Image (cartoon, protein in one colour):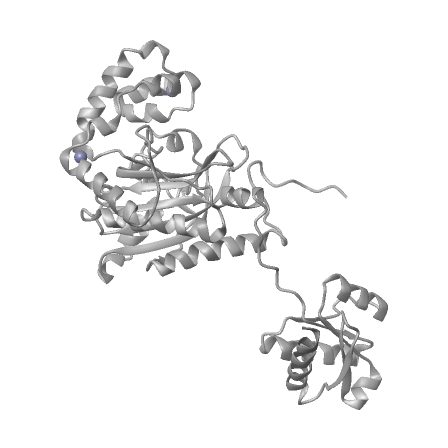
Length: 428
Ligand SMILES: [Zn+2]
Ligand SMILES: [Zn+2]
């Protein structure tokens, strides 16, 4: 048999055996966010294209090269979200979430879409955990958001994740900086790639994250934003560092860190994995974005973490994950009347939270027991005409082989719980 098609390039299936790892990983980030007062938001996978042009910026790599944009049957241009922030801002405004009081704290676990050359840790459908906070201008908010991500990394057991920190200032201080950048790059104009030539006029800062080797070599010698920060931005950045130190968070200042999206202001940060050699995620402040998207001036900040990369990091260090849910009781059956009973008994167990299963493939008894072994069922029961008549059956502990007769009538669940508790006590 030949498959009609394969999964598109740059996508992965998350199958049983791996999905449990995702659940465990996501649970840590979600619980850490909730400890910090964040609540979950889910936004559509596609948005009006305009949303990303306005927020991410039309001179960014993401918008210029990577978006999945198409016209729907109604002739509207829509785009699969390339990142999580823009949708969260739109939803915050559209649903008036600010009415509940500031700060608004949101988190999401989501997939994003970027048409890039797929490589290790860089997929076209990528998975992110992100948070956004609105209405908090204080440097303490920056520190809380950063510390929260690092705390989740530590809880997962990732000890080699660092923090790189920079400030890219506000529109005021950036004016001077843009001027200096433009001067610097204009003098080296004939070496820049074509994309960067157009950026030179519209947004010289984007040249700093061009992936072309020549441009990035030139960018290394470019003026640093930190030399151009205005007094307020400088003070904000100092305070962020002070709070981080107070929280025991170590960081490295990286004046070359600008992040590839236009909406960032002031604090920007990344979390590099020292063993993998790339960042597991990052974020920053975007104090002008809400206004840019039609809301009242509202400070904002957040981060996006690449879950695909984080799982790579966890697997590289052979992290342990919780065991998947295992079948407690497998109820084998012979004949239709017995199957009916087995189905009812497993249903009764499910209602008490006990994982249980029975035969759904019309297998013989021997094959059923082999299957029970394969799924590592802790207990088995066999139902046939005799058991139905007697109203009792043997509950067998698979490892010890010990059995105990229990009711398969009214008292079934109680009998099962008593017998299994006694069994487990014996084996420890
Ligand atoms: Zn400034
Ligand atoms: Zn370039």
